[in-house]
Image (cartoon, rainbow, N blue to C red; front, top):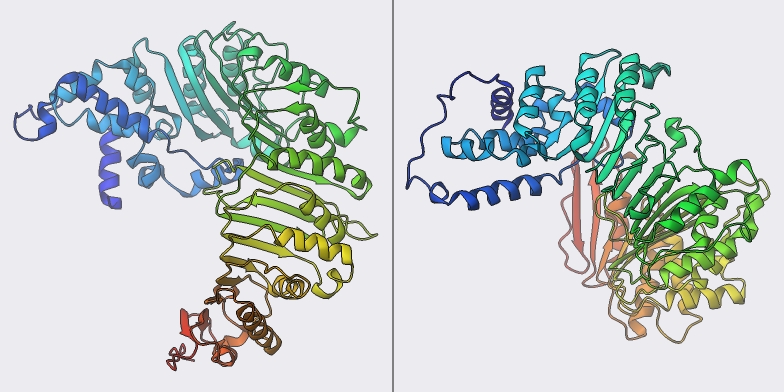
Length: 593
């Protein structure tokens, strides 16, 4: 669908209703299409299935206020394929205009309209359409989602929040964010939002509410203590989380986000109160805690004060917090075996003594985790990251992700080579399925191998990866792997066939190519499969428009080796990915200078 068709579809969507039947809707002509003669109940199932399938299309979970603000300022959703073409509200509207029979079915089905309300779309619609949508929902339970960016005292904010307040008694799912310019830019709140917020807070109960994620421009939202159907509670950081709420034991998912980057306030509850609430959540299967910061302002004890909590159904944990808070929470929670973990934490040089405890905690989760075909490990002076490569999109929850960073220490890096190697070799890693290993370190290959203990630890580490066929790293990791092989009778990475060099590797140096020849020939002498691919494309172009080709020709004696690289001219305007097979005698045509 091109932009003109999208515009026409959007304008038709905004057109006000007529007092009579729409003349554009043709009568049903039997035989015109197989779908036209389907029974009404089957048609209803098709309509229901299509709206539920498309409903999974959402804005990226990583979007914060600034990203959404930029999006609304620079993109008209009427021209956005993602918002309009596939939006359930638009689909339902257009479906109701196909023929009279379909229209009658849809207008007689309030539940379909009630489950596709999206304020992102409605924020661009005239006020009468809000009334029409409300009318079409009848008395059905409502599912509403979306984000809106409003001006102070904008009538749109009144419409959105009044709609929530007036229909709160029949809400089933709420996933709504209203961002107000004065809140974002000047730190003040709109009185209109306060008024509507008070209306919602005045509701004594939410009898049908199953899931809530409500962010009303940084306002304190009084959430009902009684919500007998509630299964998911998401606070960002409003509505405020009350550990004494009656709906605590029935929760399946809890998300508390106090993101410091968005100037969120501190929690109104203590860690002890949170643990007390978690102990009552025996059915919990998803836990997301961000920015609680209990360990930043006080010396948080790691032993003796808090109870151990067993959550037998907990299969997903996401924590982003300071090191002491993260360790304290994870130490006292025992989840289901195989629980997924996404941990992002930061410590300082005074917390070195916590590293062994953190290692034990990560080991509890990695022990039951079988990695997929990709594994990413990064060990820099201030960072240790272990990531299951099956991340997919940013919004997809990884099976295992650990990111530990440290403040800079004048006395030297906290996560030095000794600690990083000890950490990696001290946790169980089930990597027999891993075929692609990404490894980035700041280790000096020569200095790292001075210690015999380090050599044994690294041999143990690399010895796990017997299924790896592709190794993605920089030059130092290749040198390290090569020199380790000299100290080991068993081959390391025995199935290795492809090497990809990361950006920053010294692929322009003669020394690298001489080393690679030696490395490949040594593996050949061991009777291992030949390395058949060297991928230099992540490196990009060489400075000044130089070509990789003169150095690549040095590898011409490695017959059959395929080399991929990027070539360009001195202006960097003409860029091409080139391929050269060593020994073929067919040199690629360079990009013209």
